[in-house]
Amino acid sequence: MLKIFLKEIIIYAVVLSASMFLMHPDLLSDPSVRYSVMEAKDNYTHPLIYSGVLYVVIWVFRIIAMGIKKFLKKS
Image (cartoon, rainbow, N blue to C red; front, side, top):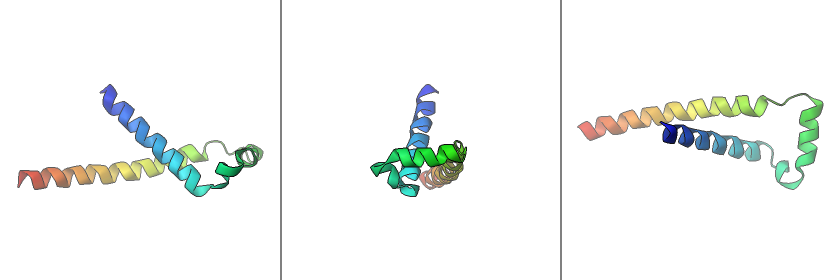
């Protein structure tokens, strides 16, 4: 159970990191500017919410793919 939990945490962290750098490429050059804008708007939770929604979408596709794989294996 712990192994599955750690795997899902790693997947979520990858989704969070990838979406962060894809949506805000300026984080690679000067992250302090992005953090100051986020602090000024009191917008701390939006990366976690957006990544959570994206993670759930990816999770649904993974479940469907596992179901199809199991169905094809049975046939």
